[in-house]
Image (cartoon, rainbow, N blue to C red; front, side):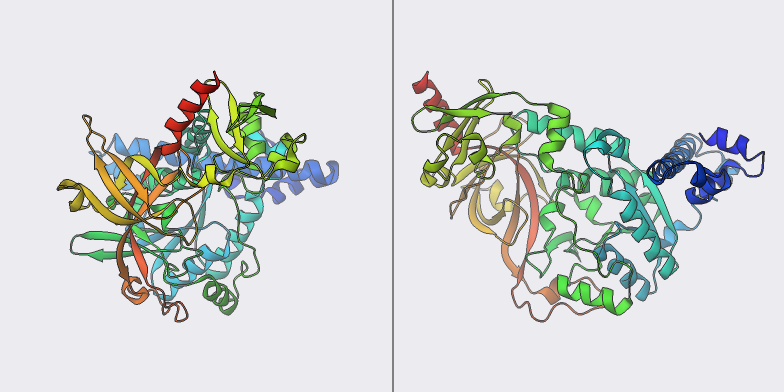
Length: 495
């Protein structure tokens, strides 16, 4: 496509010129705006944007690969340095096109820092555009307007292939195995602070985002601390980051609450000041998760059985559409007995493709006091109490994004392998625990918001939120619950 356009322009521009050219200008040059209806014209211009983005990313990867294999060639290194010139003194800001990252960018500028913005294109419009509209175009336009207003260079980096390999395939695999994935946690650890860092971020001094969380540097390393806005706190989504990743992180709005961020956006008159907060999984945009799963995994009908009696109540479309504790949507599948509800998902048997439901809320709440966790990422190292008898420690646990922190006793289990397992016993019942979920651990010691705020953020921590916050110690993946063994016994009795 690029070659054809350059040929059509009769040598009037180079590849570099075309990569920098606005797609609207290209369509006008060839009179496509007169030949094509608006819908097809938009599609053509979007295709040009995508080709430009992917070509830039490919050229950038070629440069990085070439640099890594020619580190001893000083003349070539000097030539290549033009591409990444003087970025060591810049902060790389991941700009999403939303209000949070826009305010974060402005606050860094107010501190006198040199910044460069990046928009990461991970939306899978090539694969699932027919299911819904692509949200990335509007996001990118807002990001461009913000950078234009603030005089900040903006680069678009396509990481669609990497996102597919490291996040989307994980999501599909977990869902197919009947587990509950968390792609947002994986996106942060593997893409934003993983692949992006390897490709570009390592050439910058630090990486900044608009997350509601705080990083505190101590003599023992860095600590991940909650935002004082407990409802917006995103430390849960960052709990899989390592010590090395957090050392490069900057969260300029982490000490603020959402109303303060909105107020600053108004004060700075940012183009994103009126944008609503994004909802749902980062790469899906407005697309429903069930539609996404159905596109890739399809449907696989199976029986819905009553958890206590084994009586068949209906048919499900696929176990990957359901999670433990779920209530929404079951009424449509249980039309003959919907009046006996409300019904909840009690368990899933992947071997028999059977969904178990219950209308007894006690079945949902009672067993969910204890579960095991594996693959734990301890940000600052495993708590010392877990290495000494009785190998237990009192911590706070967060099982999903939100303000709730549940007191729990965490016990290290005997293990013959390299990976440790832990038992978590909650003080309070939880009705939504499912294998595959992430359980994030927090310290009992509270930190005042002023103590946790990063130095030089440019704004005072929220005065109205007098609640103290906790340090996030890390997170692990829920392996099973106490209910799993009960399910096995139940199935044996039914059979």
